[in-house]
Length: 128
Image (tube, rainbow, N blue to C red; front, top):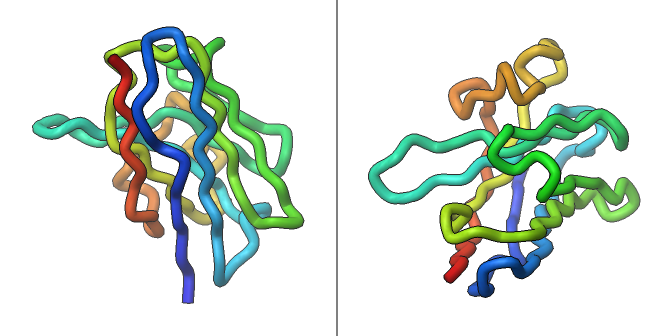
């Protein structure tokens, strides 16, 4: 049974930092393209970042230079670190996975929620 569980969300002041986590069970995260998305009510889900293996990462322009994503293979866990947070970063954040059959779909340019097939329940981030 494949499952993704996010945690670490909360409220933070502008300029602050938060570290989220996404624990995967039922499969090994290194064997998949892992993505982070966010969504605010009334808007489409937006791609934020992807990671393949432990080194290949890609970020949306809106978070580049502020967000970093890493993995702990031993814990099968992703860690998006969000720095210099802005009010416009407020959203529900989701982790997701897709097969590694398309490198393009695992880049910021090709990132689309429609191509990811396993999702966590989300964790809320509020920046004020």
